[in-house]
Length: 330
Image (cartoon, rainbow, N blue to C red; front, side, top):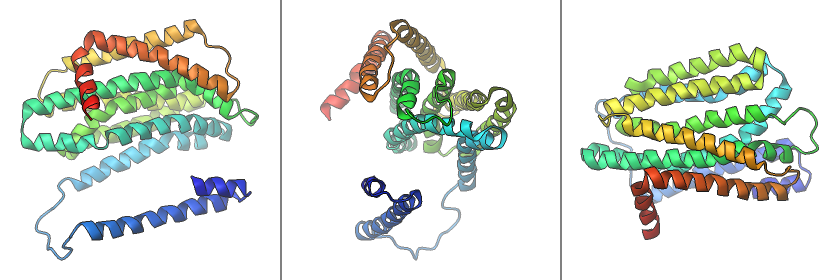
């Protein structure tokens, strides 16, 4: 970031800026290699007997399907729509992809804990920990994506102020793309459970079908609805994947009723709709600068924070107390 900023200030071309980034990223594996050799004594001469990584090809198939899924929108827009739509989509994607990365980073360490509890065969502790993780992800998703749904368009308009190559004021598209990546975040607990339990072969079909579904729906709808068409395709395909993975995890991994999750989803929906209505009624003043965006962001965060805390205090008080104690103790 520092290197890129300095080069931009010096007037360097985009090619030079990206080249510097590439060089820096190439240096990182070198230092990682030194660290591993210093801290881990690995015997590279051990002969492998049998298959050391079961279902690895199924895992690769899932990964390829995920890459296809993530790339579909831009490719469909490039082929079937205009480059103006690609430009608009890229700016909105800048926001939701950052949030997506945030959720992936926050939850990355949880998967190993789930895997550890799974192989220990402590079913009660395993279920309870999963329930807390599931609740936490749902709660954070509603809060963060709720705020995003209200602020994504104002942010984009301020961010692209003075840029007139396309119409960046796409309110409905902002809601749909936020919904699509909100569903992605809701999918994470179930995706982590599948990876922690090694159920790649049993679940790879859902990843492949959702990728195909995204391509087909987006290609069909983009001609009539443009940007909204690809966002709808992503939302429908992601919604299918969430429901499929949810059902599989509850039926085949934790072996319990889906009542707990159904309750979560109903509360998510009610609190989200209520939050959108309240923000619409308050009708925050017109945002035209970074200062007014920050003020609106604070107000929006307070509104959604109150709603999320109130709903969870009513329905999931024990989880709130448990998580707060953990954070306080740390």
